[in-house]
Image 1: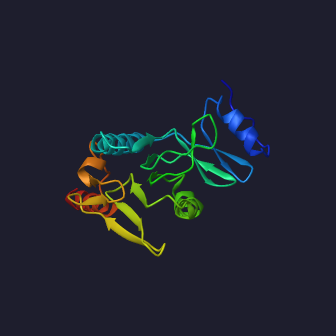
Image 2 (image 1 turned 135 degrees about the horizontal axis):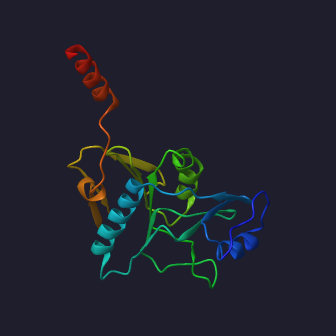
Image 3 (image 1 turned 45 degrees about the vertical axis):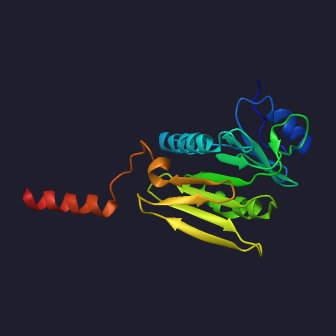
Amino acid sequence: MKQLPEEHNYTIAEYLELERVSELKHEYVSGEIVAMAGATRAHNLITVNVARRLGNQLEGTTCEIYPNDMRVRTTPSDYTYPDVVVVCDEPQFEDAGLDTLLNPTVVIEVLSKTSEARDRGEKFSDYRAIESVREIVFVSQHKPRVEHYVRQANDEWTLHEVTDPAGAINLSSIGCTLTLAEIYERVEFPPPKQLRSVKRDSQAEME
């Protein structure tokens, strides 16, 4: 097992060859290697919750679900690892390695402080450009908030944002539903900053 050398521009062939024996996961952005940061407990819980719930609903169908480790080619020069990806057509792969998916149906990203800007920016744009992608979901790990983007017939995208802990999203392209209670099972959120401030002020007055 190897770790990829740093500060080097790679060809796609070099990246794939090295990535397949690397101890760490890396994304590939137009010749540059981007190391993936470690995930928090909340991030891992959410990813597992989503993958488990979707896996249960997709049992017996032709769909396949891949959490964490399935690399996706988003453009001819970019490769990434979505937190959860589902494919319901016959899976298409870049080569005989069968580890680089070309035709995802649903892409789900759990947002973190280190990745949110890129997830919402270039990666979101790249996912929308993949013809097979029908739905994209962003899940916050810091508060109950799920953003669900759906491709329309004219290739426009609509947003359904859910913040109600009793709410749900319907992934119509794969025939699945995820409630926020399922997504955030066992995830604990810190109290709002404003409430903490009010509490401290109240304690100070009592003293």
